[in-house]
Length: 311
Image (tube, rainbow, N blue to C red; front, top):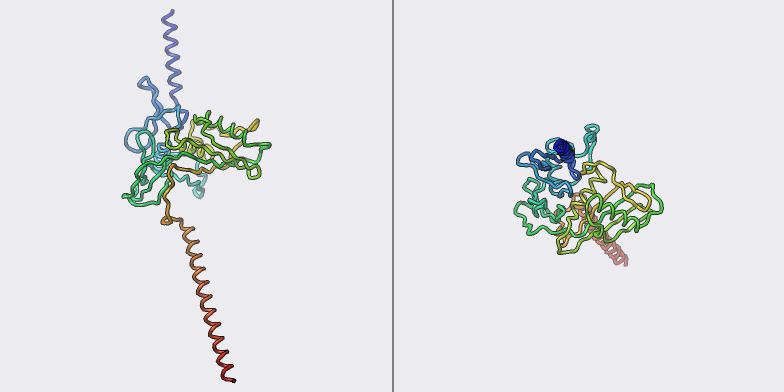
């Protein structure tokens, strides 16, 4: 009888293991398998080669996430939701600014990125471009660490009596429970009730190892702008006292340990057009002023000559 009970318990334990291995908490696209008696979850990043093993108890590195999104986009796999996507052909989506990155074995970005093209650039630890674009000879000596990010959030209009202190406490809980990050990373929270803006600065000590702020920011952007990367698709809200605030906008600013090296070489077309128009306006103004003065002097000389002739 005792042996039978042990057998039943073992069966239930095995079933429980299979169920718990069925999905990955932090990555809805992961494939989990326990055929080797150990639950292993992997993420497909390329058409060829072995899938990338991931730890479903932690946030997946942003470099792997971007690479997985590009792989799914190339293969016409959904990057949003099973019943979502373009309703008609004329519909369009926000440009997430992703590219197909080159990743280190541990999920960090390589300092030089080329998006599988002949054009390359240097990135920071969050995978954000921090130099002008160049050819494949561009030198990226190191992966510069992002030690400070600013989250600019805007909540919906259904909120009353919100203050910075309660927002800071709520953001700390969100960082801890959803993203697994320490709330002590929050340096300062500011609140503009008229514009409904929440500005939160997250910092880690410069020059010392610490959590990758880019990973957390990317997950939060997906939570608020697209659809969560977590298997659980619950809507994310920010606790503020007794209220739960829903967000309608997020902008992320990055501050690196070393300043970026952008120049005017790769300004956007709009900015270049504005500069050209301003320069042309100034040149035309100077020419008009020159010719007006010249004409005025000529008229003055003719008038003076007539007066002399009359005398």
